[in-house]
Image 1 (cartoon, rainbow over the protein chains, first blue to last red):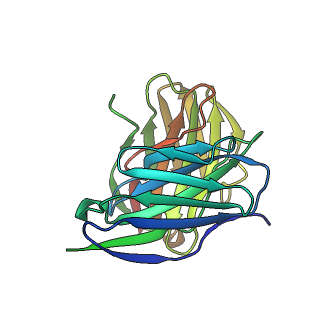
Image 2: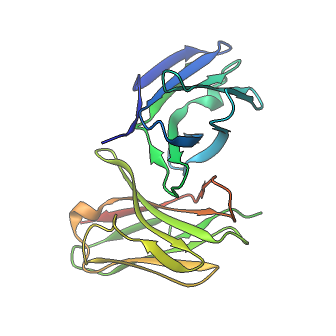
Length: 112
Length: 113
C-alpha cells in the first residue's frame, strides 16, 4: 500500500553544519506534511508543517521543502547543535483523512 | 499550556494483570489519538476519538485492548489481560478543531513481564 518512508535511517553531522533529512511519500492525494522530533524517552515534538499548496516553509533554524513532482519532503536544520540529536519523523495526511502516516524515522547524531 | 498529560510514565506489570493508561488532552482539543510505538513496528495508531466518540478503532490489536473517553478532558486505554508482547511505549496525542497538527504526550513505557 501507499506509505511514507525515509531515505536514510541514520545521519551523523558535525556541530555547526547544516543537516538535511529526506523523506519520500507515495500518496499523491496527501495535502499536509509534518515533521516531528523525538528525543530519547520523550514523545514526538512538533517541529514544522507544510501544506501541499506551498513548496517551502521556514521556522526557527528549520526549513521544510516539498517537491510534489517527485513526492519528496525534506527538513533542513541550520547550524546543527548537540540538542538537535534525536529521531526525526516525517508524516503525511490525505485531504479527507484524519490519520497521520508516519515514516520509519531518521536518527540524527551531532558530533562535537 | 501544559500540553498533553499522560500517566503513569512507566508501568511494570506481570502477564495477566490489568493495565490502565491515562491521558488528558490539551484543553480545547476535540480529537484524541492513542498510539503504540515499538522498534519493530514504529508508531501505530490504535484508536481515534472525535468529540469523545470513538471514530476508528481498527488499530486496536485485539479484544484485550479497550479505550474510553468519558469526557473531553480524559481518556483511558486498558489492556486486560496484559501480555509480554504488549510491552511498548504508548502515546496519546490531541488535535484541536479543524487543525491537522497532532500534539503528543510524553508517553507511558509499559513493560509486561
